[in-house]
Length: 132
Image (cartoon, rainbow, N blue to C red; front, side):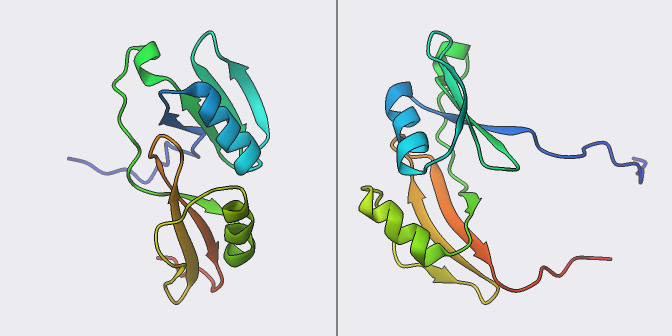
């Protein structure tokens, strides 16, 4: 196998998260999380929400011929202050799994959407160290 230094992928455009109840998911992502909705096509089984750098596509997977597989690796949603964002979401009925976690470089607070897709509030407070 040969390797190449040419970068093919230059970004991530969107991530698809499955739902069995589009209206409930639209309410959660729009009202509870406060994300702006950019697309809403209930007849086609999906809606899209903008985060600033990644579109979240909420879709009825089975309506599109796909399996409904809950997203289990937490999607890290950047916030400026995890504690403040968590408090606001809790006031909107969002339940968190455990206490806020401090890794030594970032804060994380884990929760799920109404379909069980794994999400987290995330804030890195120390610079990222990257490989050269």
